[in-house]
Image (tube, rainbow, N blue to C red; front, side, top):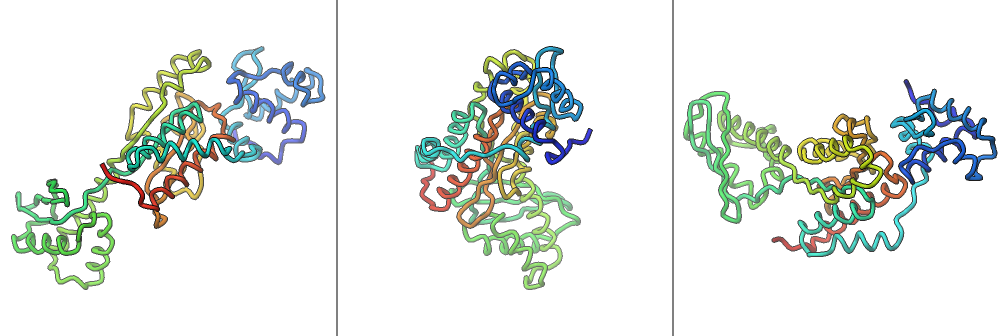
Length: 354
């Protein structure tokens, strides 16, 4: 069933819908007509309110878990509320100060990321999450060793003396001279940078014909760069703090949902896939319940925002995972502020390294 736009709700239905959603987000419990009539915000009899509630249920915005238990918003109803009704409140001065203290404690990037997830967990009563690509080593040398007619071993030496070996699949046999030329070519252009930082410049140079490499050396480098870029993207670092916050009294009433959610939080790659969808967003993204396949069974929501380095490049994603009854109006700006604060700290380059 398609969710009706907010403009199709009359003022009475809109007010009642808002009160139901706000009541549910505050308590985690369905909201009944008697409760709505007693709030003073609706000047209608319980019978008239029940009629409006039924209309909202028929429209797919509300659901009744039990016959006489009141209504709660559906995932579609929450989406309508978030997009069309919710009034976002800026973080308070105390909340901003708590976030900044959490990021600054320890003085390293690693502790700042852990602090970001921890402080968001504490403020949201959900699980705080931070996802960043695994740090790539800064390299000083690359060489290639033949393994077989269609394979070569790339030996990557980093600034700290570490050595990493990667197997590169080739389209054809490559002579030793081409292996040596490719290694020398990459080594001259790395200059203490990561492969990702230099990859596009190398590709542009090869594509424009400015390199003196032969066809075999070009093929080896292009295949190596493609494989290494893909490999780096598959190895994100995921920091999760505050899983215990998900085990409140309301959640414990549905043990199976909690068990499902905790199982999902163990799947780092799967969660990273969800957060990665927020990388290209210009602002905070909200994924509600069944909108995301990973969390559809547990009925959980994700609020996530990308954070950027001093040059405006997306570095990672920070966010909160919790039940669909998260206080979106409060959590969204906190996530956004945390992302901005991380970006400012990274931009000042004021961190030390372990």
